[in-house]
Each structure stands twice: as C-alpha cells, then as structure tokens.
Image (tube, rainbow, N blue to C red):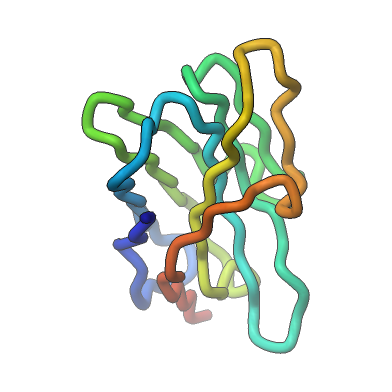
Length: 126
C-alpha cells in the first residue's frame, strides 16, 4: 500500500515536498515513480528512481526543478519540487514497479508501474 502526502496550494516560484510512504512492501525491491494528472488531461510521468537509488529519470518538463529521492530504511520516496509553475498543478501519484533487478532499465512509462497510491493535489497559483 502506498500513501502520498504533502500536496497543497503554493504560489508560482514556490516549493513543495511530496512524500510517499509504503507499507506491506519489500520496498527496496521496487522501482518507484511519481506521476501526475491535471484536470482534463492524460496522466504524465514526472520522475522515477531505481530500487537502490542509483538510477533516476525525469520528464523534460521538470528537469532542473524537481528532485526525486528515496529512503529504503524508512520506506519513503520523496519528490522535492522547486520553482513551481501553474502548469505543475495536478494530482500527483506515487507508484511502484515490482519484478525488477538491479540491471533492469529504469522506466518512465506509467504502464510499467502496477501498484498505485492515492493522489495528493498540488495547486500552483499564478
């Protein structure tokens, strides 16, 4: 089970940190990802991180502004979001991809992630 926290209302240029806590998982065996869906739009990939944190991928739209990280001991994955823009407004979801080994290529494709948490809403005002 995955639970995401940390969403809220922030002004453009501000920052938020999202957290996703896992329970009932062998957390360190899963690649983790953050994805988002704005109202009326398709789900979009944001960032993913490999099971041991050695590989990270970002969507072009967030590169240089967002940072994904994880703490396997605490079973938490984070998304630090800086320089937020109104177009970052969306419901943000965390997700896990099982069945990976250390040499599995890290995917940004949401279809590869089978376990999903509830979303947390991020609203960026202009």
